[in-house]
Image 1: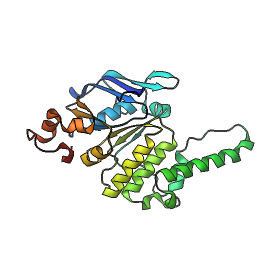
Image 2: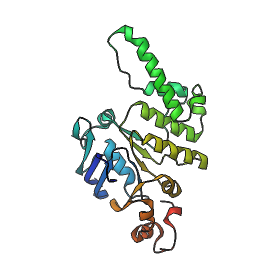
Image 3: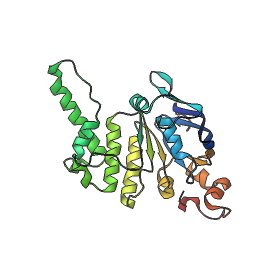
Image 4: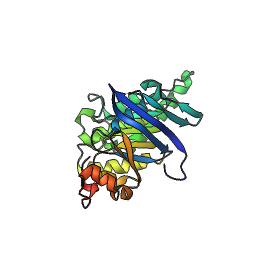
Length: 263
């Protein structure tokens, strides 16, 4: 965790075993409030499993996950996936999950947390506030001009941005993103990086990513996993210059550049 940031999420000695195989072994992760953290490593390193543990999709066989909310610390290790989502931790998987036959606007509208008012006289005011929020979200994800498009007609990158927008409408404090730029064009990838930086001004993000050029361009802190364990933590420069990381990605060829490898 970067100095000066208060912790919003703490994973302590997380272990995950599947039929005797340890996918994650004693993993520790401290996430600072407002931080954009990239989690990288070779295939099978345990990165996605860590996201699964945090969001409740997979239960840890050892260790605990602590969510530091404004109202106090909360152990979420054994909570169900929907409970964790309601508490404020949102998860995005690799493939975008949207309603393709609905418009972009309608997708965001459905995702919004509906705060039920008691008095009918408040409906118009609430409706106006909801419309304002949706328009703000459309501007953030760069889809204002396509608000009335059917979501199924968007490009791959635009669908990913829409799903990020859908997550944000649910007001999470922490976002977990699994390979958000996979399959994107270079232009879409750069736009996604800028979007994540903007979101991180008010929320906290963990990104699992294999595109090392993307990580190098947008990461401030990187954690490298290997065989279910933390191998290296620091800036991208720290990671690139580490002999162990170079060996994991490139074998013994220390002279190669890890930033151009694929994990």
